[in-house]
Image (cartoon, rainbow, N blue to C red):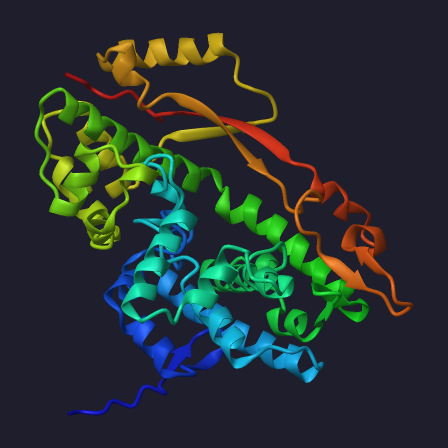
Length: 412
């Protein structure tokens, strides 16, 4: 029987060499469920704005595992007890935390399935893999569900200063070229400690935390909520809304079998059995891109034109405003566009629409980022920071938008 060397390394453009620490991690990475992440874009359609943003969830997961190894090493050096079982649980939990993402990540989170988010699907994947690997992921699942008795283990995987955020900010900044989002993840990890079972940052790391929060704010407004990316994602959502409508009306659509299943069926939390999970695991960005290229020749004008707009990057004009768009104004825009393009109002609504976006950089109601002060107190970062605008980051900022094509279209 052939014996494989599983202690391999990946060469990552952010951190350099990332080593696989044990056989279980190797086998998880090697599993088809995880390999699918190579074909899932980390940033959806953001590459239409930032040409370098073609990195994948696979990149991100490996980067998170690498940073978690550093965090474990740091905490152990500071005499924080983390057993071998807990170490394995942390590494598996952070490696698999995003395995439930569908095609184009957040862009299609509620278009493929309904009333179920990627975290819930990640949990189903992890439970299925736990059966496959004879219970090896039991501790990882407890940590992922925030049910482990050691609270700081849960916080390393999911909190307002977790390993996930440290990697995606640094990685997305690198691939988009947006320097304002770059953070010193290694410095932040070096400053971590545990007090009374809570994850804290030592006081000398306060400036790194301030930089982290400001970087997160910049990345959301400049990248994640960039108006052009937003317009493209809204078009993609409307493409699948239209595709489902056409099927309900008895139409036909050519696409891959797994994609066809999710378009034809309303799949929610209660429907996600093993067979459905396996079909979901066959979906990736390739299915969606292939469908768009086929559907741009569809006889339905709305579907074909929406696909054209994404494939050829002929995106609608999007306007961001501070107040809700008056319904009368939107109705007037929609009616004028429908008349010019020989479309019904219902058809025109796929091209002329409004919505809102919200960004809250720091949530005071969630698990806080606590600073361990030299005199022994544990204080929220907003109470100790010299940056007066950190408190402002805890308030949700809501903006409104409306989209409309840059020119009229000739409908049927």
